[in-house]
Image (tube, rainbow, N blue to C red; front, side):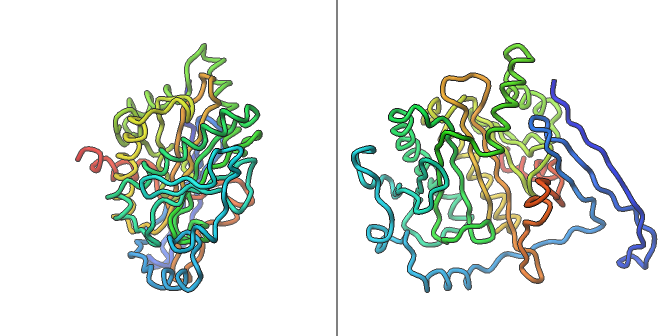
Length: 343
């Protein structure tokens, strides 16, 4: 029922790094088994290694600007909720503060400032419960929206971690958007999941995908409780890590689900730290509450500056072609990560 489709194309050139001997360059094109969007994985003769990113200059520059999320500024420099709708103007718990986003990306936009510290590196992210605490409180606020506005059906939670991922504020935070219209990718996965469910007589794509990934054992990383972690077949970045929950929507998740996810997230942070990854993009997508053909799922994409000019790793392929060009194979990523799950 699921096809892992790929083709390999090649061309020969004279390699200047090997005495101009003929070298067969290869590109592997893969189709996402659900959306059918393509990704391109480049076969490189040598893969550049990255040193550990030095945050000192970034931290200094960010502190020269008045950070709105630092404790001394948050009350005066950030938005407040409409008390008539939410029942409060601001909500705080376990070091997390939820506020409205100053920028309106959808009908409802929330920001969770995950801690008081202005800078949190990967190592600190792996040792603390920042994400668990933030998701728990965010979901409480999202439930208020769900219960008060029946037209708001599409829920997602996302994060830009560090400037190379598009984050304009260094102070760590995650965001949620809710609206009447899904984003392109979210809507595509919802539609294709429903189509798969109908054609295959009630089988859920995400369940079948996990069964096949576990059986193949090429990209499956491991489980943390009832969350399943894998390296997607058609990656959206050089390191693309996926997680599938066993629940349909955000509002079916319980505390154990969030703790299971938190455990896998910490392992992922340890892996990224070991690989000297300085930033990431993360998105968690919810199914529509009450519908059965979806599973809550996450994608996390590692982000880097590219030496020697510190160029962005986003390019015309993903911005203008809706195509992802990658240098790392998901099979290699999953192989490296499995040890963290086994420990």
